[in-house]
Amino acid sequence: KISCFIKNSDWKNTPTSINYKLKENGEIIEAGINKIKEFFIYPSIKYTKSTVNIDKTGNKTNQVSDTKFPSFKQQTLFLKVLIESEISLYQYKENNVNVFFYKKKGKGTKQLVFKYYLVNNKLAKNNMFRQQLFKHLKCTDISDNSLKKVEYRKSELEKLFLKYNKCENNKITKYNIN
Image (cartoon, rainbow, N blue to C red; front, side, top):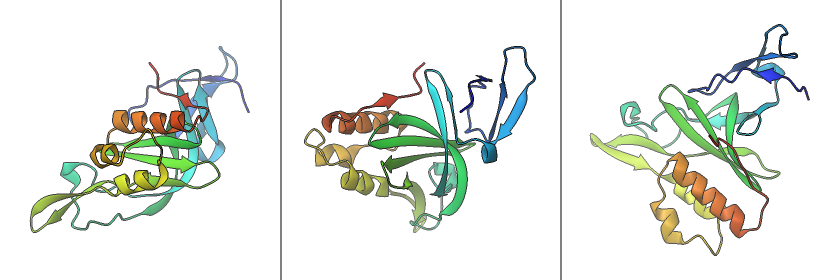
């Protein structure tokens, strides 16, 4: 662990490296993903390194695929921590890619799958993320109907993960607070 001054670049896209200083007037050091396990800008921003299977195709209408099924590639990435608890929520952004991941304590990090695809030249959606949520977020405070209606949006997923972890009396840390 290194306590340092990290340049908060207000990243629109998920970073692949950061600039930091050991002293306020010290030299700027750049560190890439291969040298960092996680970084935290107190109190609101946290990124953690994770090797995940990611499908970067099809979660925007201008990236339509011809297949319903995700095309996963294994990559080591920084994931932005949104909700940290027994079941945590993460986000990855890169240009037009905006995907969410979840992780149960002690298990691997998995992508919540959502993608657009074409069927007979008509736009369709693979909402597999709802089935994933249904399987992992069972709680008396969360109805099946609410899981059927949840959209693949940061605000809705954050509310759902907060609700689940509160329902289970889990300790919760919410990041990305302005």
